[in-house]
Length: 261
Image 1 (cartoon, rainbow, N blue to C red):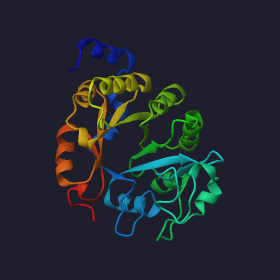
Image 2 (image 1 turned 45 degrees about the horizontal axis):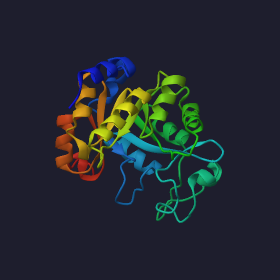
Image 3 (image 1 turned 90 degrees about the vertical axis):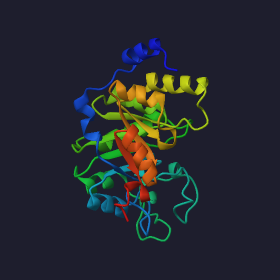
């Protein structure tokens, strides 16, 4: 149940953005980690090229290399996607950029390479990946440095509300989002945690777990002007739910409604 005093606090502590700031987000589906599968590796330049060719927006993941550069890679460890082992954060950008994805001739790209490829032709959502012990400011700064001067539609987002908070303080014109999953945390303590994350992060939009929609929390934020995206849309049924309860889908595979091979 949503209490009236909380709705007042939402408007005061985490006000909705100017609609013009986030208008580009709605009605545009995003390829989750690029258009991957069938020989294309997630978060690779080839996957992003294929998303561009199909007219989709792009979602990607970013981690910070040891030399402070923003690299596009999902996992903290290299083992799942490459023939290497060890932490991404333990290697510098030159070393990471030379590592090939398993079964592919492509290497791990930097965020700068990805933005150069896109060149403003489609929107991009950049998810900042961090563990609790990492320095959030260093990660955020590595991304902001690359975004300086980039004029294409773009947004940053993270499960960690400290990321949205950092951009609110240090780069307020950057569209910032909070990634949310209710998972098995749907009772009152979980609701309060989501509420506090919202107030701390002050996001312009939410990226919500499709498994949790419809959600009272997401619907309340959407009604007051926050854009709601949803992930990861993998089936036609997911897509139908996304159309009913969100402004855009972050999708892969059959989540494009059969439009993507």
